[in-house]
Image (cartoon, rainbow, N blue to C red):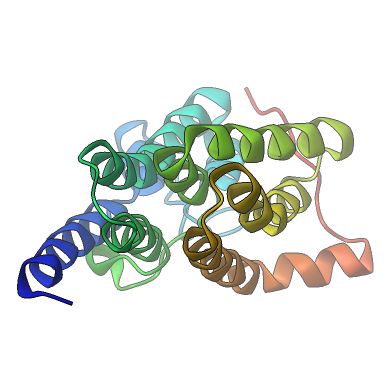
Length: 202
């Protein structure tokens, strides 16, 4: 790997991580006078908890912001025709920034919206297909975590079959594993039949 590529990867990785570290949920709740999502509701700074705390508008803003955090770095890399290494570094770093944000003591969200944003940036068709799985599961089962886990589980296969890139499929699989780890309590609740359903809020 030449020096120029290492520098490029480092720049995209750092930029992606810092952007991913910005918590849309915390900022949205603060600006809208809502409780801190880290200490209220499910105590997760993500769109689902913001929906519980402040309703549809606040949740939509959070969802859009979290998706953009993943979309912007990955899309910037793909738009500039960067090698797969750079695109992967940009997307994965943004995802890690959301999970482990440097600005908030490395305590972040679960990464669902940010993962979807990264997928859209890497390959818009794969991203759209994965979002379709998420929306379908949410519509049928009304369980946020089940929708997220199903979409994430299928994401590596979707991006492989659409883009043909084994490397990108592996990178997405890494994000999927991390997302499952962050949802370990939700998985336990699903298995025991105690996971809550999506509520519309106000």
